[in-house]
Length: 152
Image (cartoon, rainbow, N blue to C red; front, side):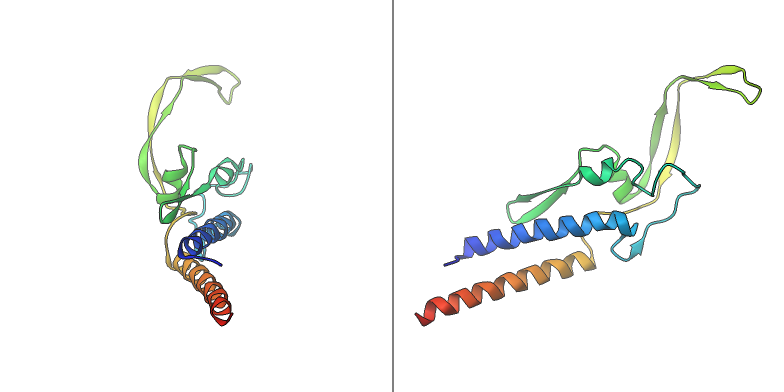
């Protein structure tokens, strides 16, 4: 027999699994469900948008916390990509080669940047639809089990 606490655990567990799968698919869709990401400013031959190495995609972790599911990433650039914004980037001193073949040194400096929002995790209309579906399915299973128990 399932009780209220078990129902809650089942709902949260299903939310963790289903939302993790959907958020992972956002990388394939190159969109937050149906909201397409802004394309790159220039062509980049080493990989797909937000998936050059796959580190960001693999870094998304979901854990059940209290009465919800929390998604986190240990990758420092995850938040700026997901939410968008501006900031500064430090550039270390390095050596370059000129078009004439002569090496020269680039001094350390900072560079300002603006990152467009390319959300892959978060709340939205589709997220709420998934959660409502999970709750409805679990409550229906709970009611079936409850009615079988009452009939006996």
